[in-house]
Length: 168
Image (cartoon, rainbow, N blue to C red; front, side, top):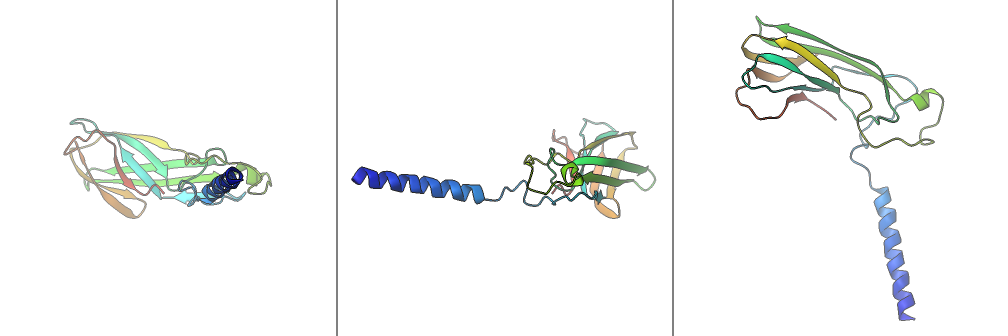
């Protein structure tokens, strides 16, 4: 009798733990916008990263739009990055536009009737190459926002990309 009672309690504890774990929000997807069938534009919001090179004036990197969009439930329908370098004012200006859509919702399927992966790679990424620039410290702009400064060549070599902006 004692074994049956303890076994029931053990199964009950396992059931409660599993139920509670299934209700916990996933941090990778809680801030993700729920896409409708309409396109969503992400303009001048995101994350700009520059590749770091030893004592180099060559500039390249990548841009990721702000937000977490499932790669299985998001399709980019437009991706553009316009870059203007002003070597007299020492500025690098980025203007970006990403437009994404949920292809299932666009077909009229109800949200929740299909499964989406819990990753954030659906909006895509754009790599850019600016080429060689004059030696100096440049202000980095995304749209109308000044994100910070970067020096070419870098002041110190960290072995990591140098990034500005907001990813989520």
